[in-house]
Structures are given as C-alpha cells and as structure tokens.
Image 1: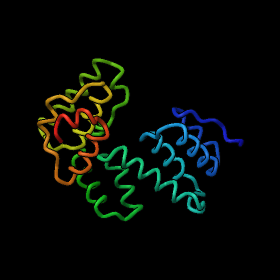
Image 2 (image 1 turned 90 degrees about the vertical axis):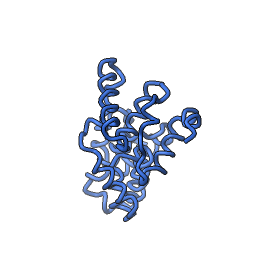
Image 3 (image 1 turned 30 degrees about the horizontal axis):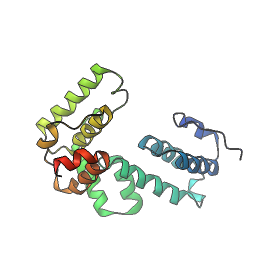
Image 4 (image 1 turned 120 degrees about the vertical axis):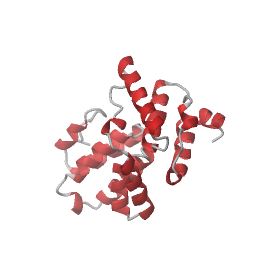
Amino acid sequence: MDTPYTPTDRFEELDHIDLDAVFDVLDITCRNLLPDLDLCTAFLARILKDRNAGSNPGTQDVVLRLIRKAVALAPFNHMPLDIAARLTGDAEMERRAKRIAGLTTDPGIMDMRNVMNNEQTRRRKRNYLDSILERTPGHIVAASQRLLFDFYAGREPGDWLNRIKVPKFARHHWQERLSCTMPPWHQRQGA
C-alpha cells in the first residue's frame, strides 16, 4: 500500500492524498486509535472539501460514521449535531442542536486547547466555567465542559455538579455523559 503515514497530530497531510487513500488512512487510524473529536473533524473537513466526494460510493457511509462518532463524543456541541441533523433528517437532533446553539454565546466555552498545560490558564478556565454555571445553572454546554475539565485534571467533580439544573431535553445525554465519562463518580452521585 502506497498511502503515506499520517501522524494523528498532522492532519494537513491528508490534503496530499486522494479520497480513496483518505478512507484507507481513516480505516487504519480507527483500527489503531480511538477517534476523538479532532480526528473526526479533520477527516470530515478533508472529505467534504474534495470535489469527487459526491461521486465516490464510500463517501456517504464514511461521513455518516464520522458524524455519529462526533455526536457521541460531543453530545452538547451544536456543530456536529447540526451537521448530523441535516444529513439524517433527524428532527429530535435538529431541535437539540438549536437549543444548544441558543446556549452557546462564547466560543471560549468549547475551547480546551492548552488549558491543562498551565496552572494559571487552568484556574482561569475553571473560574470562567463556574461563573457561567452560577449565572445559568442549566447551561448544559458549560456543564459538559466543566465535567471534561475535571476529568482531564483527574479530579472528582466538585459541588458545581450538585448545583446544575440539567434541561429536560438534555437529561438522557447528560446521564450518558456522566456514566461514560466518570462511572465511579456518577454512581456515588446517585444519578
């Protein structure tokens, strides 16, 4: 196989191979690594900008698989939800994407890049998310990011978890998020 090796942090190399090779690299990558949201996004962007994507018989299945994975990885990120709703016609997913998009006013809520590498940045991000949750206890996007923040820090969620008010439309996905992200903590919370 003549497909060049593409390290997971160097997705720009996907621009130098044809669409079938992109599918091969994706297949190899998914066999060796658990895909994360960045991986899904990078492959989706590469596939969707290809002029031949519409005529390639594998495109639809791969795009739907990546979108489903992105939604599972980020159930409170309106962008993958919106794309998935458009591609599948799922009305519930469309409603959820709109509700979540209505909550997200600051792109900084979703940005977790370089947060965990610096104590001062980490403290600012934690305080920022906490301030959103104090003002808006039902802000499921900020709550989800705060949950990830604690997970990345290797800490059990603090009192903020008991103060949030999960909106009805998000309860099922929040319960999944808790049980998949932090099973021992989730069980102690009785959620």
